Amino acid sequence: MLGLDTKDTRLLIIVAIMVMAAPILLNPFPADSAMAQFNAGYPDLMQRFVIFGIFAIGFNILFGLTGYLSFGHAAFLGMGSYAAVWMFKLLSYNVVPAILLSVIVAAAFSVVIGYISLRRSGIYFSILTLAFAQMSYALAYSVLTPITNGETGLQVYTNDPQILMGENSPNVPHLFGIEMRGTADLELGAWTFTFGNGYYLAALMMLLSFYISLRIFRSPFGLMLRAVKSNQNRLTFTGVSPKPYTLAAFVISGMYAGLAGGLLAAMDPLTGAERMQWTASGEVVLMTILGGAGTLIGPVLGAGLIKYLENIFSKINDGILHQWFAFMPDGLEDFMVTILHPFIGKGWHLTLGLIFMAIVIFLPGGLVEGGQRIGRLFKRRKTDDASSATTKPAE
Image (tube, rainbow, N blue to C red; front, top):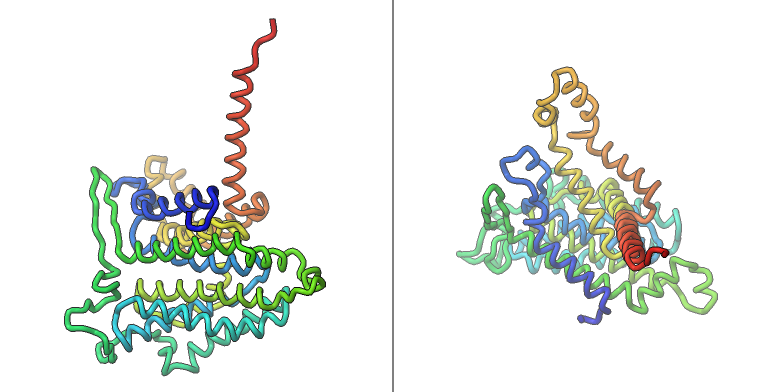
């Protein structure tokens, strides 16, 4: 199916079902319950899950397959966002031209940056990409202000040309009239499920990106990238130059980042230089490692975990904690709130840091390795039960 073997086809179908049913799967608790705080099935957050999943999938092609660790990939994310917003300003709010230009601009910049950075490898390559990203951030923040609008951020104004804007066209990002902010609610008892137009556009883009990643991983091109990661010198001695392959991987990865940036602009037509900061580049590195570098589904899981912590744990405050532990005696309630206070709200990074340390120490392969261990454990138990059931007692 679609050029994939049975195993990969099954994986693609499972991912597609999970993504399409996410508004239901991510809302396990009733809307009026105390645990509703942990629901993640609202459109804005789900869009961030899949958009940063695209970003991480692309980064994984460079880092997971090729072994080149880039600390500057957020530059392409920001460039894609700027390109998309300029399309909104010049043409119309239709997201198709915006997304196309975001990918093209990110590809063009990644060719230039990749051609220079890939002259070095290892830590020197990483430092070069970080330098380019910080230069891009500085240019966007304080030098190219006529293009980027500096620290205020680039946005659409009523006096912008928007030459393709029709009289009946929506005044918000849309897909041929379908507003990205449009939603539909489904109420089933105490549960409320929200389905967003913008989420499903981003979800379809993520599934397409995931499928392309599958084909790259299983292709001869992907095998060459694995050979580069395994032993680049040995590959060179065989007479094969790794540079075209590494540059192609860098450009593909940059295009993924540009696509993610364009989708972020479609989600909210406002972008600033902060999307190019080194912290944003470090975030995608964490996403890939947490999920499982070099795996197919790992980067998506890592992106979902980090964005969940950022958006759910950061909103928990002392008042919510007091509600949770109100059944305890006052002294014990205050003690529990004091213990948990550093890990929620603005301290969510501490929770992320502890999770990252635990995964690196106990699950070097990321969340995917954890799932594989659980699967092997259940399979072993099932095999043991079956063998014990077939064993006859001795007479």
